Image (cartoon, rainbow, N blue to C red; front, top):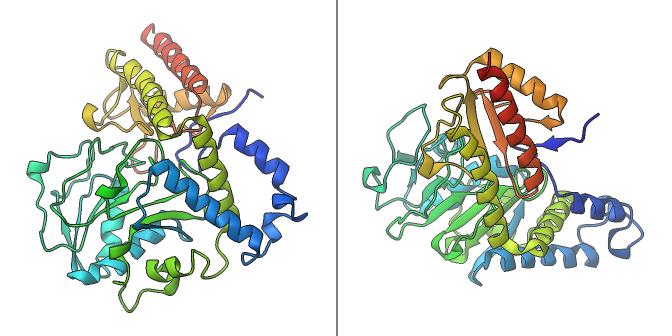
Length: 366
């Protein structure tokens, strides 16, 4: 069996170095003689580790002191409900920029708790972030919500929107810790860990302190940011092992050179694939406008703009024979999708690009 190269969108590839650490520590957490899987969340050992993970988040993202760092269960979708339940009470309304499937789901969830204003015209074709001049922001909104990178459609913001003083909330699930961002420009940043910084089971939330203490009365304590902050993310038994893996991945990022190095690698890796697509004379098609192309999730079609399903099926079969796995596009859009997260190596991208070149040569020669 060939070596596996995982281009899955999530749960996604973890760094090999992190796997080595997990193997060594799985049955003996920090010298306790027992696994973290059976360690009390109230033990001094876990409390110390809990603080260490917060600290590495703060260092890597240069999180200002007036922000709380929270570890919460429920993944990114749990925060689709937590965001409005914690914030919308301020004015009863919120702005949502829908640029793909995940921001659409977030907006739909928020409608259960208040009035949602769709900043952009409704569409089912997500290929661009429209210019800010086309946005219809409500100055009375409690917050403005964006998905910084759409995992399914491959649309990524290349700028931080100016929301005119209204708190900006960003779902960064699939591009967390892949680029440098100015946290002070956001009211809240959140994301599920399983795409780029760990495994499923935990969401990371970074929230400005003045946005606490606004939760709706119906907000469950487990989704209440203020309650979570007061309890240092240990209101109940947290998803400890998922937090542990996230911490080990973030420490790995720090050892690699931090977000600056991740951003440099992300640009190189994604550019290699996009360059091949753009120079393929129409054999490969990337639907997203160039300025908004994701550096994390690269969807494309083969044979035509709408895709030749037989050709794409053959592509996927040939890729799997070479160990290139989880390249099938999301069921909602079809086609192919290559996710080039931090843990995906340059060598793996080169193997994929070589396969894409050979596949094109084989079929254009027919």
